[in-house]
Image (cartoon, rainbow, N blue to C red; front, side, top):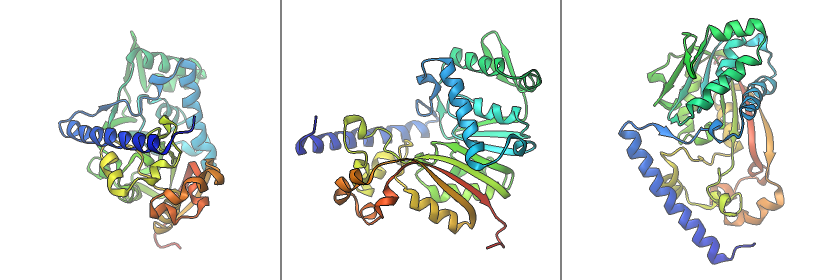
Length: 314
């Protein structure tokens, strides 16, 4: 059913007020040391353990295939995973493949079902080859429905965002920095990329899957998928500055940032909004988005693959 002009206006402002209140509640809780959230609780929403396994394998395989690297390229590498959420299955895949160390960094602690997590890790082990199971057992201890990471090759840090990661991590330590649906949640991407640049070794890789959609803020009520780009910057910050909702950066930002940092990069568009859908709402968008090429408003999901070059190289 098509919404009337008044219904759209009411829904938009109802959502705006809801998210402004939630945003400041999140900020207060974070300052009080409460880091738990349902954001990132991906596996908690899955219907089966097989769904979780499929997701973990897909995320890991995507990192390799989009970066055009193999399992052999992982051996001996130090890896930083941003926003692991409620499960460390992807990190475990890197370690089993021979990574030297992996650090999982998250600003928040994603709520998780302990029993479900045990079953996921057990299922991961069950599908491994015998020699891989030995690697698994040297990293993870499964005992009486409990999961314990016992190797110093794995480290989990929460309560610190990537933009502040230099407070807890050493510069030029990582060979790879990976993330899935994380960068769009970070309010200050300039600070984030500057930090990642300092953490990444020369010839190291960034591999980021970025979701450019509104994450259901307005689309959950049947509104246009680009409605969130019609909200003023001031109001959007009131809605999202603390709670990890989308920062609204488009594909053009990632191109500019990679060129600014002198990285060799590729951006692969995975899903798009069609041009007719964009043109339908473009006159209503905020000026910074209205002035953009429609083609740069099309991407909904992208993969950024970037290699750090020596700063003396052009």
